[in-house]
Length: 365
Ligand code: F6R
Ligand code: MG
Ligand code: MG
Image (tube, rainbow, N blue to C red; front, side):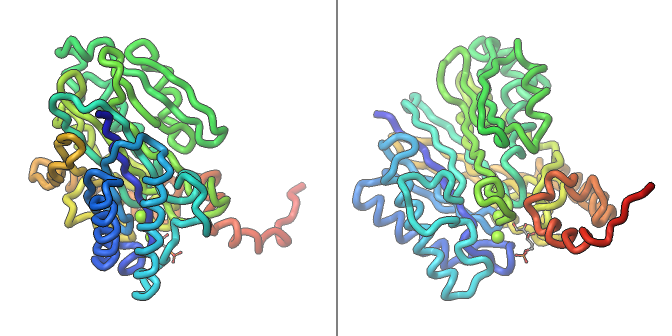
């Protein structure tokens, strides 16, 4: 039996402002997905929140990009949006960019990461969910996990990993993709993915096992909507162990709080702080950007878990470092590089402000 793990998320109203998901929205989503489990449409589900993003984690046998599953997610977001409107939550329905569902939630606002898999004899899976950052936030940790032996000892020690991994990289501006393989294409991969405003790792496959090891969401809301409509706040699924990086090699990549774009008004760079589920509430300057990780064992589609993977004092130093970096970046105020470079600000509201100046600029001789 092939099982599909679908993680579909949307910000459909914040509490207060853009901080968290109101418990009533979680309850409504729970109710909808329980019905779907009872009817047999899905095998199992878990609902989580990362900042103001409602995260639906579902298993089923219908494959990726399945219309019924995407419609279930869409209808769940719509039902929860109704609750958000009643409570007058902030930005109710903000990520639902169209009125009518047209077969697939991609391009409609919600973020999606899905893997269809033949379950291995044991199937450990990690789901990462971030708030206040863009999809390229996963580029650096995914490279570390699957290509950097200083992070992942298995790349050197495990014979099932020494042949490397195949990376699918998307150019989100030109809507193109390329497949490159480690270790031979390592430098080319870095030449692309270091440009985080344009290139995003979509998936990673094991060269030896021929199975998908990781899938990320790559939707860019602003590119879909043509204007700033909130940050993308991506999700990522990573399978672990037995020829793939271990659970600990995967979480280790988040021990360095690297800079990501998306803090305050989607317009600032800040450190990505790994936190427990309860701390996934960006309370300082709408940030700093956060990431949570839910650990599961899959058993015939049943989701055993989640284990709250960053709820560990071993990540305290990372959080401390992230707070120091946050403080340092904040002292720059509206100056780059805390503020994003001009090209990245084109979808924010800044162009409206600058428009006023058009008539008063003069030529310099
Ligand atoms: C939203 C976000 C927030 C908002 C900010 C301004 O994802 O990151 O920082 O951009 O709170 O929100 P508005 O413009 O809705 O008042
Ligand atoms: Mg929001
Ligand atoms: Mg968010």
